[in-house]
Length: 188
Image (cartoon, rainbow, N blue to C red):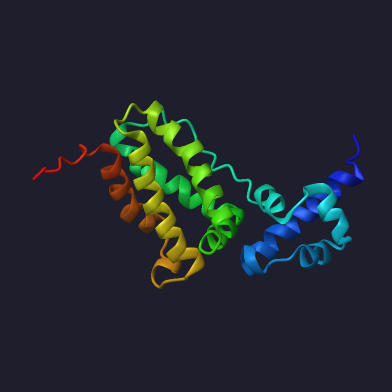
């Protein structure tokens, strides 16, 4: 079946939006610039997406594609998650675009929250860990902090660290977040 012209136009708009949001951030990216990048009239962008915010939400659509970790022993889950996230960050720049934009824009922040809340916490519930939402937040803080330093800020030596070394450093930290007993706080 032949691809419709409208599907090609939407794909061109989304590709241009991802590039522009990634390069300029949400605030500085304009519908006019995105349309120019896609070689279409700005009215077409508005016709398909309605607003800059809706375009950003569509462009930032991201599936972290968590595999079924049901067969992974809990003590190996940290390493498996570290490797998975590293592969996802390396394979697709749309999450990097979202992270770069989330540094300065509340719409992007909310999109990032919803991705991790909707996709990571349920995986941890399947693993039957206690406090899956708290643990998912801790895992996200580590993964997003690492990604910010490696892909956005380019901190040496993090930016050039070999993947196996990254997994060796991050895996135990993620495992601790997933397997350690919740802290008991002394109430004074």
